[in-house]
Image 1 (cartoon, rainbow, N blue to C red):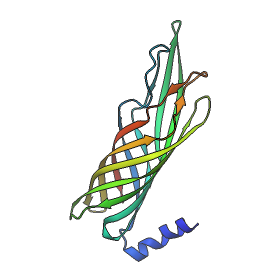
Image 2: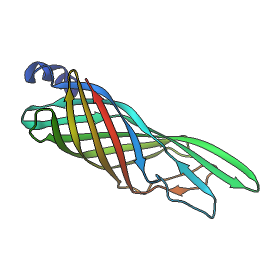
Image 3: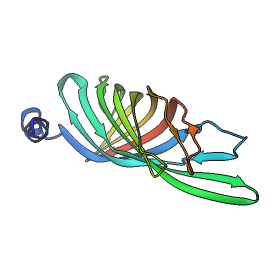
Image 4: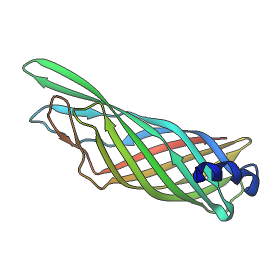
Length: 182
């Protein structure tokens, strides 16, 4: 309740550009899961996408919260038969941002906790970790465009897979994201 009140009152206190909403999307670098050639089981993720909200504070500081969706497809080939199982990962990074001074383009660094859940597999898997990012905030009329590189580190050992077979997730993930906020 207090957090929602803060998001409502902040634009009045810090100016009209203090609260920004939009979406963020991107592509991952590398595989989300470790390959297991013995089982011929692979996990594919080609994109991540979701809404974002940011509270811009004075002195270049800000707080952003994203809800990012990743789609996975696990395929298992056994005896000439291929079985495909879909899964989804939801990430919830809450990051503090610092924007360096600038007029149109402002470089930034960000960091904070991230919470993740993996659904659509034999068991629901939750994990938390740390997200670190760096990029540039480009301000054009009525729009902020923020390309960034984001590194995520999972603290728990996450495994997933269809039909009771487990495939370990990589603990480290690097993504290229572009945000559009209004």
